[in-house]
Length: 104
Image (tube, rainbow, N blue to C red):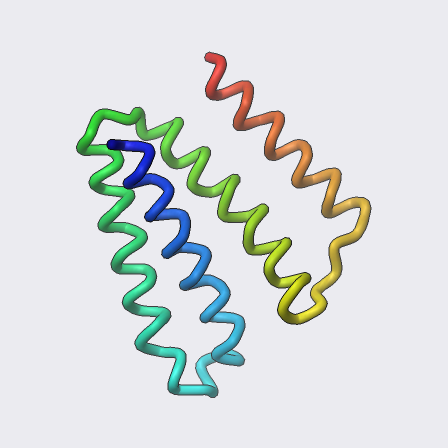
């Protein structure tokens, strides 16, 4: 069950972060509720992940790594944000780092 909670947490964290971008520095007030609700849900589900037994280092490592990758890819698709070779290399290093944490 911890994996389901973690995946839900990641989905809401990514939604909140993309909503932050869409709000244009909080100038578009319609995005305030989705931002707040997304982050409350993200941390609630992360708490449930930890409560169900996943180690905090693993949970937080996966949460941040998957979140970074999804936000970068989705920001590219939505707003044409850059996704350069250097950024892709960084994403690759994140994936390797999380894999090493998982193995340990």
